[in-house]
Length: 142
View 1 (cartoon, one colour):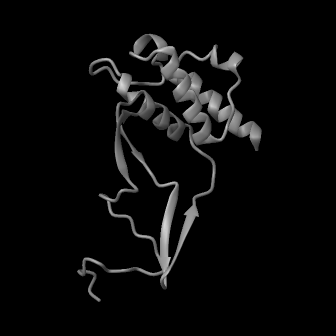
View 2 (view 1 turned 90 degrees about the vertical axis):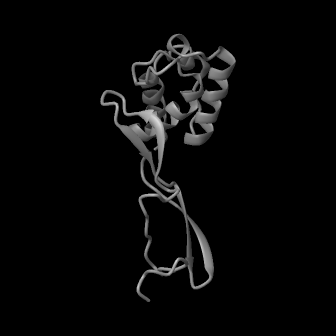
């Protein structure tokens, strides 16, 4: 094969094209730099000799990934063209109400497999504080 066939299968190798669904851009800029962030796959489906397996990628979740997830949840509440950054005060700088904040927190808890106590949620004001809380709870979990 010369690699030009549209349905070419590579066995025992993973190939990601820059336009792959595994690498999709979010409209959430990196806090501080304004650069666009990339999202990578958490699960890959691999076909080898007709057997399909799903592989969950292991390893720690980076703080940048946590912030990207938070930004993706907050994007619908963005005010104008002002970017959502780590310093964004969730209840003040965005058009989000307390019910939507709690829904977002529950989704993030499910996504990152943590439980944020209500007393801690009350003390979280910024995107950075929420990301740090999630990271700290994941680290404590081991």
